[in-house]
Image (cartoon, rainbow, N blue to C red; front, side):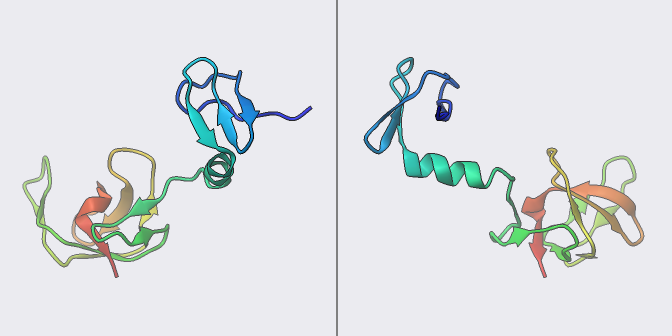
Length: 114
């Protein structure tokens, strides 16, 4: 017995195949079998910097904008190099240590890969 993927729109289990398409009888959503195979192959989130480069753990990035730090009154200046970043799944995508400031979290939209 083959198992068909659940509907990506409503998560219904009652999908059926018609030619090269999958169809959901509950919400009438149709999608191609090729698209279902492509989306299932790579479920990991892709992190990108401000210019669209793909980021990975251990990359070195530079800050592209002055960032004010909450609570300490300091500022991380433009061009500050951050080495050995770690990507995390939260609203601030990058955990890192910045010399002179210590451990902090950054958003990937404010950095550029070196």
